[in-house]
Length: 262
Image (tube, one colour):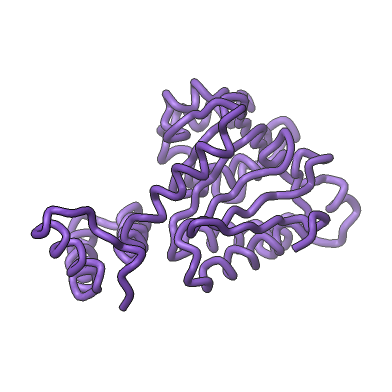
């Protein structure tokens, strides 16, 4: 991809970094960006050399939400627009069979906040900010925010953040559980890459199944979760990764989940 592409893709050490590339607009999303990002995620999923995907933004922003100039005057309803662009993207992130890290390097607003919340792991730069800005223009949070946010911070806090369009800084986000780690701005890119490379060394098949189990458990009963675990545990136990882990344990060495092949 050229540097003019709305999504930049780079793979190193098993980590595919997808960068939203409209820095002059704080990576505000237009149709091209959203559809291209969905396509690039699917390409990363199909690439056997990719073990972890990182989503981040170019320049000062992660994603400032919808580029309103892109939809102004368009003959398309809100529902049609969401079902064409954002909803397929969020579903792709949540069902991708590889871990997705949201590396929030700057402002994440509106649908950009939803995108930041959609990752399996969220890493923030110290200067990152999140704002559910929808109520400022009398709209409802979308692109998954009403699903993600209350599960992270609770119903009442989520409602408050949405009602007042309250800006959340990195330290507050860490306390609320909106992110797992906060890194210094100057080392953010290197820290994210190092974290992602650590994750890429973990057992890919087991992590894929773990993601499936967690996604299912969020909306299941305990009995359903137990049944799902039993099924997926058999799938994991039949995979070569399990044998490598057991052998490494017996040999008192670190397991190699990357070098070993089927």
